[in-house]
Structure formats: structure tokens, C-alpha cells
Image (cartoon, rainbow, N blue to C red; front, side):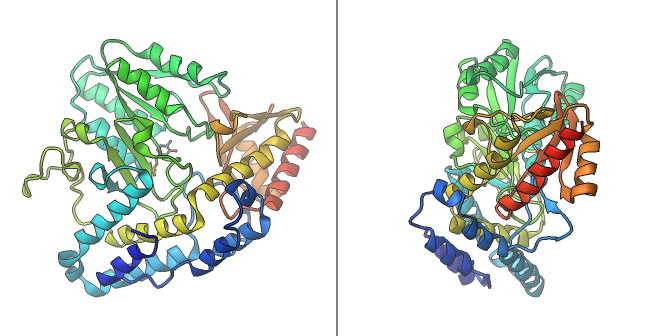
Length: 424
Ligand SMILES: Cc1ncc(COP(=O)(O)O)c(C=O)c1O
């Protein structure tokens, strides 16, 4: 389906989207002759992209890691959907709700490179991964491997399975600057024993932005009979990849992060042959779904269907902007500031320098300064909004620019860090 016919299809179901990203389409047309790396430093183009956002003038927002705000047109479409669902009442739910959901699944699957039958929309990464951790057929003594740098909610969910089913959770610690992919693969391989059943790994470590060699980890684990669940909270809509190419069994992400969907949307991918393997946490027996129907795992009841519709608009924005163009710009922005600070005395970059091991997100600290002090000085003295990270070998602020970030804003950030590091 081409990029416009999806919205036409939705319109046919009574769901027009009044905002169609026509300006963006026009601006993209003007840089169509450039490759993504060239466009990455075309400040005029990105200033136009920025004009599609409403940005709070009180601070420079370098904290898109929590979630990514929506461009105005996605937001307006979302508000339109809220109004329309309210206007139609249960008529919408009883007529086209599921057809529209199916279209959204197909469009998401298209970006994810999988089939619509292997993917469901959830509320967020936490829900996606917890459905797998909680529904996994654990037996007492089974082992699971994960990392100290993984997200707390998932670590807690594994700990809960330890209490409930008597599983053993083993945690590795990921170095901030590995010498090679093999160093990381080896780390996980060393934690595997004959009792290991499931390995969880972050596609992009949230506190440092470190991109891990997922395919190699999956291949290694599968050779040892271990299944792999990937926490892709920060990767979807950020990096360009196909989920099946990663070789994992399960993959979860939050669509309100890099796809810029309204808050409260995620995706869960389950490799088709693994679907019957997972216990549904919410039973769905009435409609007699086949064992390998992924909807078995996702009977969530009545939910904000207007958000589902806005996923379609966010996908549209992403496609018009261009996934490769977006990834190249995000990587350019990160490298723009890290390359200026990496060798500055007193400054510690907690993110690998290798291009392929990071994209938008990086983490920076100042020797002798607590991360909380750094983030609060950045806000108070320089009006820069970031988040402090102070755990598991990472002391610094996570810096996350977005497509609306300008290099001028990053100059202010670089000057601030240089000044603070000089002060000691
Ligand atoms: C690596 C990682 N996993 C999972 C999550 C949880 O995301 P959500 O709160 O959207 O479920 C986050 C949130 O930042 C994260 O960084």
C-alpha cells in the first residue's frame, strides 16, 4: 500500500485525518536529490521540520529519551480522532474498530519487516515484555539471563518470576566501551548454563544509548537452545532495521518513544512458531483463536482506540520524513556534540565512539560531579533539560536530541559542559 492510500483507506472507514503532512512532503521533495548523510547536516531542512513542532521556549529539550513529543499535525489528527470516536460512540466500536486495528497492524508490520500476524499493539514496552516474561512456561530451577543495565521494570518482572516459580535470574554487566561485538556476545554466553531458558537483551541500552549486537547474541543463544527477548524500547522508529533480521524470538517497543505516537502505545512481536508457547495473561477463549494467533496474547478489553488511529498518522509522518533520513540526522546530532567533548579533560562520555554502536542517545558526565548536580546546573544555569543517570557504572546525564533539535542548541550545551568541566 503506498503512503497515501492507507489514510484514504481509513477515510473510507469514516476516519478521515485532516492533517496530511503536506508541508513536510514538500520540504522532503526539495532534498530528495541528497542522500541521508547529506541531508543530515542541511540545517535549513531541519529548521523546517522543527517548525512543525510546538516547543516550549523555557528550555532546550535534550530529553527525548522518556518519550518523543508529537509534531503538531499528528497531535491535531489525534485530537480529531478523540472527538470522532466520542461522536460515533459504540457505533465505531461495533463496526470498524477491528478493521482499523488490522490496518494499523499491517502498517506497523510493514515498518517492522514482519507479518501483521506476528505483531500486536500494546500500551508500551513494559506491557509487551511483561506479557512474555509473565507468560513464559517457567519451571522451578529454570534460569534467565539479563543485564544490570536493563530497564528496572523488566528486571523486577523477572524477580517476580523468581519468587513465584523459583527461577534463577543471572545478571551480566555491559561495559560502556567494548573492544568488539565478540566481547559482548561472550559476556552473555558465559552466563548461559544448561538450565538457561530465556535471555533478555536491550537493542539500545536506555541509560547510555549503547546499541548491542543483537543478531550475534541471538545466534549464540539459539546455538545453546536459549530463546531471546529483545527490549527495543528505544530502537523502533529510531534505527532502520527489520525485526526478523535480528533473529530474536520476542521483541517489544514503545511507540510513544521514537515513532512519536501519543502516549500509551507499544508493540509486541512474537516469532510465529513461538506464539503457542506463551501463556496468555488475559484469557481469550470465547472467539476460539488458533494456538498460533497472536491476538491470544493481547485481549486487553476496551481501550483508547483513538490512539490506535493516531499510530497510523505517526507512521505516515515517519514515512514522509524518511526513516533513513531520520536515523542519519539523529546520529549526526549525537556525534556533533560528543565529538567536540570526547577528548575534553574532566569530561567522560559513557557511550561508545563507534558509529554503529549508538545513534541519538549518549551519556556524559563530569569527573567529580554527581549526575544530579550536573542535570540541575544544566537546567538552572543554562536552561537545558536532561536527565541524570547514576547507576551500574554510568554516572552522567543522558542527552537525547530529536529531529527538532538544532546544532545551535547543541553548541549551547557544549559550551555549558566545557565551562563546567573547566571550573572543576
Ligand atoms: C530500555 C527500556 N525498556 C523499557 C522501557 C519502558 O518503557 P515504557 O515505560 O514505555 O513501557 C524503557 C523506558 O524508558 C526503556 O528505556
